[in-house]
Length: 97
Image 1: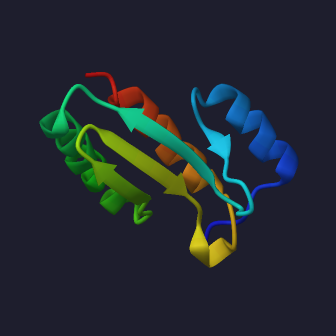
Image 2: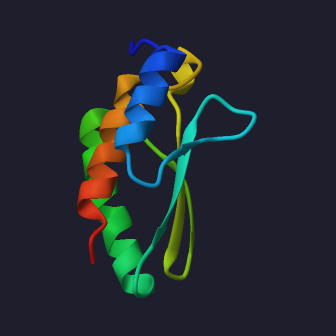
């Protein structure tokens, strides 16, 4: 099981994660991704779904047309773990359409 990272580790990681922020009132991080259209947004979500499945770590996300709101936390650990940071990095790297 993944271990929850410290507040210091979280804050240091967030400085390096373009666009990500701590979720207000929850031990999670979040970001809105904006794409050119629905097809681009859904294609990206499909690509990330395969990555998440390999990691056995699944995002909370919500899609409306070209916007995808993502929240990452590790429920088993009760907060943010390195899995969340790694998945956020992957999402950032693959969201360029």
